[in-house]
Length: 87
Image 1 (cartoon, rainbow, N blue to C red):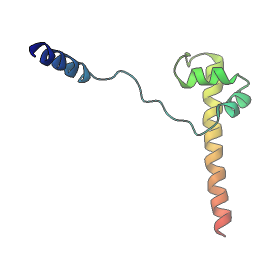
Image 2 (cartoon, rainbow, N blue to C red; image 1 turned 45 degrees about the vertical axis):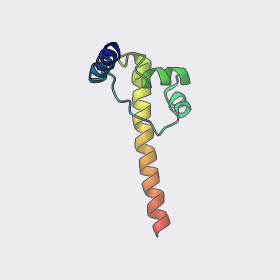
Image 3 (tube, helix red, strand yellow; image 1 turned 90 degrees about the vertical axis):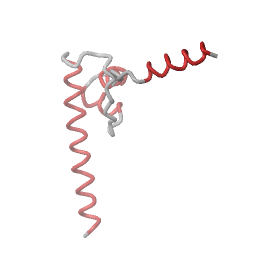
Image 4 (cartoon, rainbow, N blue to C red; image 1 turned 180 degrees about the vertical axis):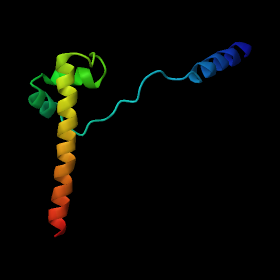
């Protein structure tokens, strides 16, 4: 019985530790769109999004810029469609 209580206590202590994982930003833009716009592969886009690839490289920078521009453009397009539909 005492052993079980110790095990529960140990696992409880482990769960109190802070997680070092970053919350990933979820992209609304499909990876294939970003890959096409940046001239890279879909797998490279996923690697950059997941943090498995350094964002300082040339390809990664192209992906980051393409993603930002596509998201901004999509948001503007959605707002414009809403405006036209409301007329």
